[in-house]
Image 1 (cartoon, rainbow, N blue to C red):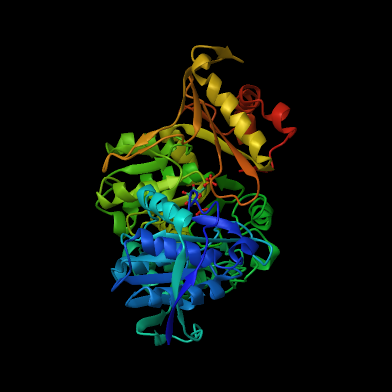
Image 2 (cartoon, rainbow, N blue to C red):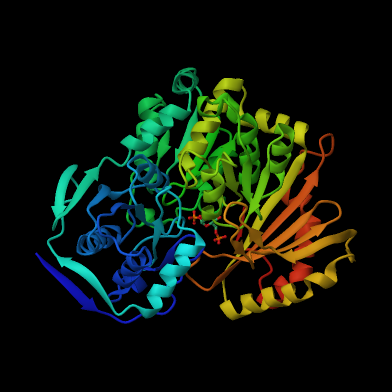
Length: 543
Ligand code: G16
C-alpha cells in the first residue's frame, strides 16, 4: 500500500451548476479531471481525517471506474469509513436516506440525472452534506475555488475492490461497507405510507405502469411496488439499470417518456402511469388521459398529504422553486401555513427543511419531496399518490378535477430551447434583463405588466443571498412568464421559458394547456425575441 501524491494542474470550468458538476464522459476521462474535483471537495471540507462518506451513483457509464478512484482517494485522504451501494448503485434519494440514517459526514453522488449516458454522453458528480442534501452554494463556491488552484491530489495505490458482493472490505486502512442499495430506503418508505391500503388497492385490480427508464429506480420500484405492495409483475417496465439507459434520455417528459404518454392517452390506459429519471429523484404522474403537471402534482400532494401516516399531523410549510406555478401557494394559504419561493435547485430547500419551516417541497422540473430526505424523491411521490388514491377511493382525474374546483387552476407549461449557441443565449437574456424595468405598466396583447425583475432570494434561515436566478414578468391578471438558462446541460445553452395563467374556481378549468397559454406563449416570444434571435420557431421540448 503506497500513498501517492500526484502533481496536477487546474482544469477550467469545474464550476458546479444547478446540481453538481456535469460534463461529457470524455471530459471526465481526461487525466486527473475527476481526481482534481474530488480532491477539491476534500480540500473545501477542510480535510477528511476520520470522516465517513456515502458513495454511489445512478449506474451510468463511468460510474464504477469513478467509484474506485474516489475510494482510493478517500482512503489516501484519511476517511475512516465509506458506505457504497452494491455495484456502485444508489439512487439520489436513497443516497440521501443512507447519509441521514448512518449520520455520515456527507456523500458523493455520481449522476448526470436526466441527461443521457454512455461513452459519448454525460457524467456528473456532486457532494451532499450531512443532512443528506446537496451542498449549499457556500460549499460549492469553496469547491470551485479549490479547483482553480489545485496542484496535487492524494490517492492510494491499491487494487480495485469487489463492489458486486455485500459486506465489509478494506481500502488501505479505510473500511468500506458494500450495502444493499434498496433496504434502507424501503424501510423509510414503510414508515411514511400505508402499505396495507396500497396493497389492497393493487389487490382490487388497480393498474399502474411505472417506467424506470432503464435507470436507477428500477430495483427500488420492483422491490417496493411489485414486492412489498403486491403489484403484478410487469408493473415496472425498463426496470434494469443500464449504463447507457438503453440509448434513451432517462428524462421523464412527453418526449423521452413517449411510450408512457402514448399508453396513458390510448384506449388501454391503466389507472396510473409514472416514470422517474436517471438517478430516481424526478417523477411524473399521469392518470387516464391526464398528465399531471409537476406544479399541480406538488399542490395536490400537499393538499392530501395528511392521508398518509407520515404526514398525518399536518405540514409546517410548503416550498417551491420560483419558476414552479403558484398552485401550491393556494394550498398553503388554505391550510394556513407558510409558502416559500426559492431559486431553482433542490439545495435551496435544505435550510427550510432542517429548520422545520417546510415539510413538502417541489419544482416544476418533475421534482417533489419532503423532510424524509434532503433530495427530491421520485418513488416517494408515486407512493404518496398511491396512498392518496387508496385513501380517497378516487382516481387521478377525479382528484385533480376536485382540486381545481377548490383552488382554481394554474395552467402551466415549460418550453425548452435546447443546444443553443451560448453567446446567443446570453445575449438574449441580457437584452431582456436590460428592458425589464421599462416593461412595467405597459400593455401587451391585453395584458398589463405588473412587475418584472431578475429574481433574488434571501435565505430566511442563514440570510445568504442568491441573485440572478431568473427573469420574471408578472401581469396584472396573475399570469406570468419566467425565463432562465438551465444550469444542468452539458452542451451549449438551454433556454427555459415557463408560462403560467391562473383560472379561478368556477372558471374554464378544462382547457387544453397550450391553448390556455396561447397569449403567454406569444408574449414570451415577443418580449424575449426568441424566434428572431435563435431562429427557432418551435421549442425542442414542451412539458
Ligand atoms: C436539478 C436540480 C433541480 C432543478 C433541475 C433543473 O435536477 O436538482 O432542483 O430544478 O436540476 O435545473 P435546470 O433548469 O437548471 O436545468 P436534477 O434532477 O437534474 O438533479
